[in-house]
Length: 289
Image 1 (cartoon, rainbow, N blue to C red):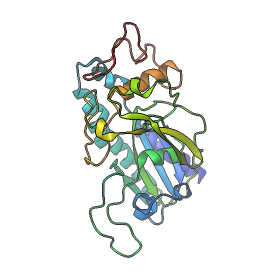
Image 2 (image 1 turned 30 degrees about the vertical axis):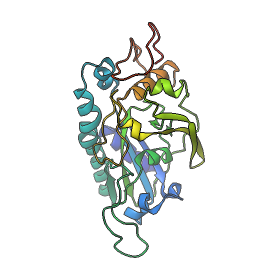
Image 3 (image 1 turned 90 degrees about the vertical axis):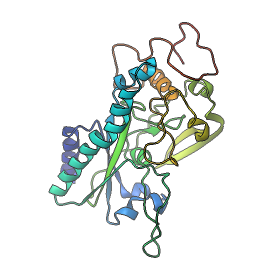
């Protein structure tokens, strides 16, 4: 299946994918049935995870506090519902053109509660939701950082994912072993509201990859006026933080640390970042916030 694996990846990139990773179904051992790929496709042998970047410039207007709509379109709505969706669907078509079934998965949050009853004994209630960021870790595309965001070596937190289940036995990618997150700042500098709580750390273990994460108080997070948005799919899911002050600070720090492959001529943070509500005072010349 090596030739088919490479052909699928090449086709996904031709269709616009910036990130493509493959996890074998065995890597989902221990995942609850209500979040397990086999609950959707019992014959699934592989999970193809597809990502497209959030361009850094999409966040510029939010960082400056002058243009919020561009991120909402190019970094959230259109990116999820048009750009990544089309890449995913075209890749699913390619897999089926090669005689293997392909189930495309939309970016519906795993926190969406069941909305039905099991159709027969032993099955979870509909609808089964796959945690796509967890799947991306299992597909070797990155890690969950300290502040609870998925980080890739190429873009840090700047990407969105969809996935495809298939009965093709594809070659899985290795789990990422090196760390991306630098834990570079105290949580109160990342989130002035105190939603990132270091006194309640936990360790995630995904396929042997251990990742230390802080507890996130999403109740506080939902009150954020510093660039976070309500989840577009369900209010039970965490808010979208990819343009929030915490994430923009993470991008700045990862770039300064030289951790990201997608490098730029000029730094992301050039002046005091925009924030509507803060508890600390920005110091002149201090761009580490």
